[in-house]
Length: 193
Image 1: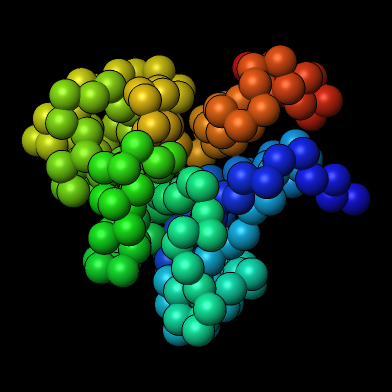
Image 2 (image 1 turned 180 degrees about the vertical axis):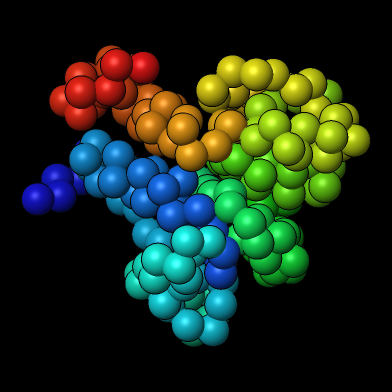
């Protein structure tokens, strides 16, 4: 049962070909922590197929008449291919990710998705991490590439991939509710981290 612990809201954006573990692990951990979270389809359907042909039915879509990015405090971009490419080609999303980052609002990306932030010029001179195969894109975007599972640099959280989805989700929990709450949640899910 969901018990809300904050009024902050998180949006996790799903595109065809996304990595379902990276998306749904974040949703699961935020739910457990009581942080309101919605999955948002960038397609014209709320049913989105992952890179492994798992269909996820999103809470809503970008094309909903009452959808407003400003209803959310953080925008989360899961990786996967071609999910990352599809997210990066969605102008409505990339424009808002840029606005959020430039306004000091929270943006998080995992696996290949940090390459979107790099291409938007949002990682210039900032510490970030990503899936090893997209390191060149981050370097080209001026990021100070790290190999940590999760890197928090100001208002941007990045992570390496499916295997780091739990620490990524816990970093988002820690951002909103503090490290003690994230550590307690890690114990409850038997995460040895």
